[in-house]
Amino acid sequence: RTLTPADAEALADFKTRVDNYVKIHQQAEGALPRLPKETTLEVVDRHQRSLEKLMRAGRAGAKPGDLLTPPVQRLVRQVLARVFSGKAGQEMKATILDENPGPMPLAINGRYPDEVPLSTVPPQVLSALPKLPEELEYRFVGERLVLLDVHAHTIADYMNDAFPR
Image (cartoon, rainbow, N blue to C red):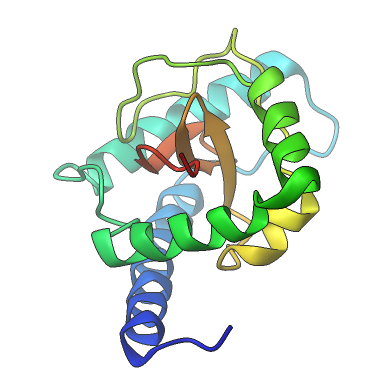
């Protein structure tokens, strides 16, 4: 499907917003001591939590929709409706929801709960969604699509009602 000018504009804006997020992320990460090659889970956890604090300070006014703006959310819903159509799509959606942690409170810049497993996102979904830099990943939590900051283990943004009805 060809992108409308409005879709192309929404994606360009999304890329700019994500690039700005990554700049803040890289500045914050640069302010921390580098993780040693040989490390422990405790050291990694301390590093994540330090990065989380710096990201929270760097994005103090952040709110839902800052990265996933309404036009991008509309586009994502269209993409997901296409990906999850048909029998194979319905089975893929069922698999995602099956291993999905289900509804839970989410907060921008908040830590992704340690006790909640990360849902896998099938390659068909990843290839259909806008590409993300290595600092961010897509995850599903209940009916929401989350942008997860992988290094800080925090929620960069999320959108509600990601799945087609």
